Image (cartoon, rainbow, N blue to C red; front, side):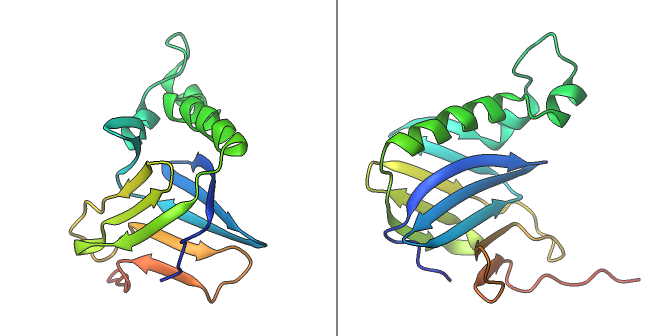
Length: 150
């Protein structure tokens, strides 16, 4: 797996129902795509979580419109957090894969990311960490996603 130690956390966003975390170190960029439960914490406070995708930023907006236009609570909080990340240095102190694909990232500032696989299926990719512009450098959990039977 790619060593993220020393990389800055630079971006939080979503693509459809997938949380995306951007990292940068020197001239390298890395992305984490989480298709399972994701949360961003500081201390004992959850700043952002997967469930936030399912709530509209504006209660007068139809959910489908909020989803399609990236106007959910997740999107709003991710935008606010990304703005903070641009002005502060949140550097990765550790990044580890634990039991059954639990992926954790701890920043020097106490910012903490958890990605928790929650499916027994061996056909579903739960998360992927990769170096942008280098398809040879990527790590997927589970490491071997089985093909569907015909």
